[in-house]
Length: 256
Image 1 (cartoon, rainbow, N blue to C red):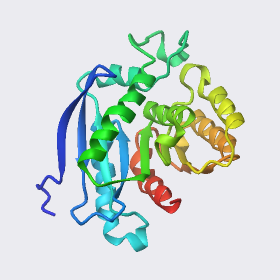
Image 2 (image 1 turned 90 degrees about the vertical axis):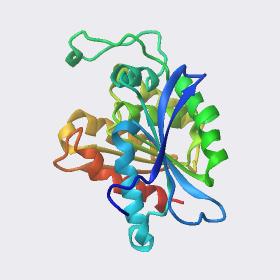
Image 3 (image 1 turned 180 degrees about the horizontal axis):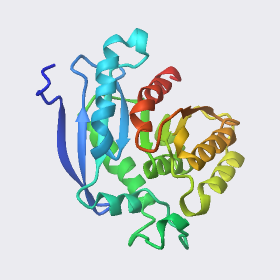
C-alpha cells in the first residue's frame, strides 16, 4: 500500500441516544470477505487508537498462519474537541455519588454517568449501521478500551456480556469511584457460570496500583471465563498500549 493512500472511511455519526456526534472510522480488508463475514474490532478512544489497531490488523493478517490475526474490520469511535470531558461522561457508570482520588486535587468533571446511553449507542445505533453496510461476522466481535475506556469495557462485560465475544481491557481504571467495579464483578460472578465470552486484561509494570487492580480482577473472573492477564514490564500508562496491542488481538482470535 502506498503510505499516502487512505485505506479507511471516515464519517460523523450523531447519536439520538447519547445526544452526541462521534467520529467513526472504518477499515475493511481489501479482499473478499469469508462466507460468514469478517471479524470486527470496535476501538474506543478511536481518535487515539484506531490507526494503531488498524495497522496491527492489516500488517499481521497478511501472514495469519504465523501471527494468528485474521483479516478484520476495525471500527474506531472518537470524540470531538471536548474529548477529555466527554469521555468521562460516556465511559462512567451512573452513581449516587462520585468520590475522586486525592491525586485529582479536588478537580472533578461536570458530567458523569453516561455509560448506559453510550452502551445503547453502541448496541442500537452503531453496530446495526456497521452490520447493514459491511460483511460482519456477528459471532466474532471484540471491544478494545484503554484506561477509562478499559473501565467501560469491563462495565459492558458485567452488564451486557453477550454484546461482544471478546473484551480487551488495557490498563482499565478499576480505581474509579472507590473501585466500584469490584463489587460489580462479585455480583457478576454470582449470576454467571462457565461463560463463553473471554477477557484480556493488561497493565504496565510502572502503573503500580493499576497492575494490582487488573491482576485482582483477572483472578476473580477467571473462575467463570477464559481470562488472560499480562503485565507489560517497564511500560507506563501511555506506552503500554502499543506494547500489548498485538497480544490482545491475538488473544481474541486464539479463543474463537
